[in-house]
Image (cartoon, rainbow, N blue to C red; front, side, top):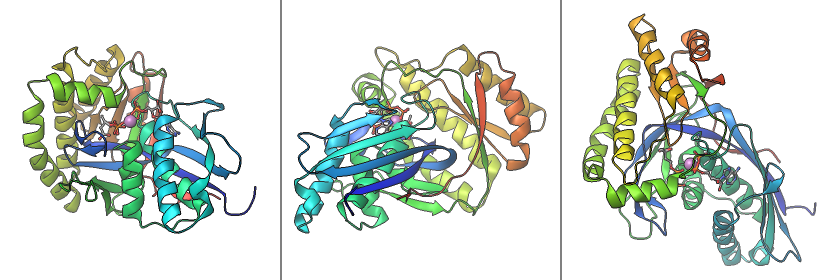
Length: 332
Ligand code: ADP
Ligand code: DP6
Ligand code: CO
């Protein structure tokens, strides 16, 4: 391809330990609460962006098929705006975006996180822009809130921010990927897409759940406690708080009207299996996003045993071990 117009990037998915659910401003896609996550080495997206002369409209290809282009074009429009202010040619060009996820899409494994983080890095690269990681995080946020965290590796914190223009709603790295090695066992119970996506689900929770005000009121306490657990490398505290925050999120989902029940039978069985492991002395804690998959936080030396236990749960199709992953980066 013609030099400078193409870039390829890889971004890893992440799993929130203190979760984002609810938007402060839908147009800016700013979150109503902050969040803290770990980036996952085993789950990632590769995205190629080519700004192409003569192309009538942006094209988005996901796993070789046409994918939903609206959010992709929104991120590209912001990139074109930056490029215009610098007089770069990408400002006037549509783009071909082609992407693959190495894990199920739209299933509660944060494909929107790795997908839009990879897009932010690839699109700015293809346009010839050099952005600070904070600016990349804001750009990724416009695609998906959780994507703001996938710009970073290791442990990341997303700030809810207060600014009217969303300029302080970005993520930052708390610890790099090597600072505190942990493992996450990803138990997949269903490969298909969820019926209510995260964006719609969280807007419905905000509009209908009587628990939503309590969710907002208690977020800062959870964030402060999680920051302290990470600072002190206190795995028990991190794990207990992750389960608590996860179950609080699902209580909010369950009290949404109509109810958001993202769990299936295997999800619940896996939760009990994790608690049984703990009773046997293995420090392992579950967390679950908007989908039926169960992620088990554990120490690297226990990962194989946790994987084995998850594989034995009826309805678990596969269990992948992941280390903590790196920040998003350019492949080409
Ligand atoms: P998930 O739990 O996978 O994050 P969401 O409902 O939040 O589920 O988001 C799924 C949506 O994210 C998809 O329908 C698609 O629009 C978008 N998405 C998934 N993968 C990519 C990708 N590689 N590049 C861009 N967008 C993606
Ligand atoms: C349960 O980031 O997918 O995974 O900003 O609308 O794209 P949009 O939502 P998204 O929501 C993630 C919700 C969550 C918790 C989390 O990742 O913090
Ligand atoms: Co998502």
